[in-house]
Length: 450
Image (cartoon, rainbow, N blue to C red; front, side, top):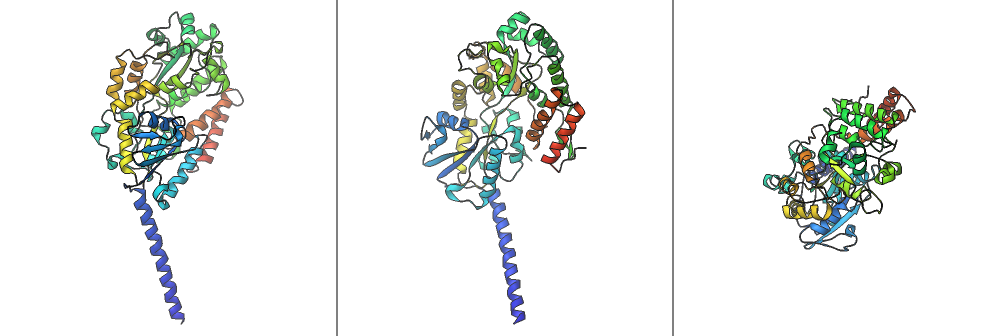
C-alpha cells in the first residue's frame, strides 16, 4: 500500500512539472506570437492624441463619437477600443505592465493589440518579449524607407524594429520677437541665431538680456534636453552609474544662470515657468519642437505672445529633439492584419501624413514630404508666419540616439530634482550629487552608484 501511495505521489509530481513546463511553453509562444481573426482591437494610450489622429486621418476608420475620440470606433468590421491611463508619474507604465503580464492568459476580446510608448521609456518595452518585430508582422524596408533613421533607432533592439511613429520631433530655440528687436536689434531668425549659436555665445547674450531687464530662459529645465540629447555615453555603463560631461555642463550653466538672475527660478510646466508665454513675463526664449509651439504656448489664449504671432524660431546652440509617440504591437495580438494596416497608413502613407501636418501641425516622420514642404509657403501663425520646417528638417537629419538606455526617464528626472536644491542654494553640489545617487540606488538597486 505504501508503495502504491509513493507511486501515486510521484505521478502527481510529474503531472505538476509537465503542467508547469506546458504553461511556460504557452507563455513563451504567446510572447512572440500573433494571429488574425480578432473582432476587437484594444489600444492602450495615455491621452487622446493618437485617438484623434486615427479619427481624423485613418482611412476606413469611423469614430463612435466625433467629439470624444477616446470612445473608439470601427475599422471595417473591427471594433476599436482605446484604454486610457494618464501619464502621471509611472501610472501609465504600471497599468501597461499589468496588461502585458496578463496577456499570456487573455483571450479574444480582452487581448491587448497595440500600446503606445514615449522615447523616455521606449527601451523598457522594445527590449522585452512583450513587443513584436513589425517586419515580422508584414512591414517592409520599402514601407519604412522614408522615415527618419533616429525614429527607427529609438525602437530597434537586437536588429528587430519594435515600433513605428507618425511624428518626428526635432526641436529648436523659440524666441520672443519683440525682445529680440529691442535687445539684438533684429528679429530675423538668421541674425538671432548668431546670438545663440553656441553655449558661450548663448551665455553672453543672457547677460545682455539681464541688463535689459529680461530673463534669458524661464527656469532650470529649459536647456536640459538640449544637453541630455547630446551625451556621448549612457546613464549606466557596465552596471555603473555614469554622469556624462554634457549633464555636468547643464548643471554648471544652470547654476550660473540661477545665481546671476538669467532665469526665473521656475520648473517646467509650472505657473512661473509659463508666465513667459505672455508679454509681461519677460522671457526671451524657450526650447521646443513643433508640438510645443502649437499646443504648449497658450496659442489659443487671447493676449498671449503665441496668439499674437510673436515668437520666432532658430536652430539654437545644439540640435536635439523632444518627444514622440511610438506605436507598438503587443505579443499575442489576434489583430495582426489591422495593426499592419494602421502602421502603414499612419506612419508610411505620404498623403495621410501630409494631412496630419496641415491639420495638426505635427512634424511628420516622412523625409521627402518634410523636405518638400520646407520649400513651400507653409507657415506657422505662432511664429508670425515663419516656415519652421527648414530648421526642423536640418535638425532631424542630424539626430542620433545611440546612447538611449532603459534608465533614461528615471535618471533624468531624479537628476533634475536633486540638482534643484543645489541651484537654489539649499545644499552644495556634492550633497546634491550624494542625494541623487542615493535615490538612484533606491530606484535601481542593481546599479553601482560609487
